Image (cartoon, rainbow over all chains, first blue to last red; front, side):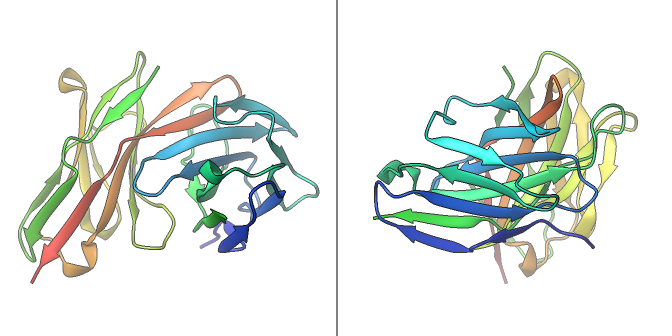
Length: 116
Length: 115
């Protein structure tokens, strides 16, 4: 079964450094998402992306965050200047379509980001 | 805005016993409801989904859930739990927001299975 893949599985970064988290969504999917889960807390929506632009972003997704689909297969999340509170598990998800079929979102295994 | 409440933070059941995990949602329109499971160190795996139609939905691994509009609930059930079901379970509601949809998750219920 096709799956969403995320790299790296664990990223350790110094505070203030830039970090890029990478995701390869399922190949025929058109909608892409990032979520994060701070340790011990619930999964929170960050951003959705469709047709090469952001569809919606949460209040967490401030100017330090950006997303990009640099080619036909990758979907990246960049944090420009990391803070301690950015430490979390970041999940990428993708879905095939919207509308009446309402295909569910399929999640990757996540990238654990640790800010020192 | 939509929200999800999972009132049980932690549940312990014996292997072979039945299981019900509670989920209540708040959403202004017809909800799209999901249950995901997360094993330690793993991602979120979709167990089942409700979009419309039959209010009792079957999922993977022998799980089922029943949508009750009058109670704003979408409880997850399994008739006989296996030790491998120990994990964290998340209920989520999906909302259309223009050209995409976002999921709002509950805080999760951690299931422990005793042998």
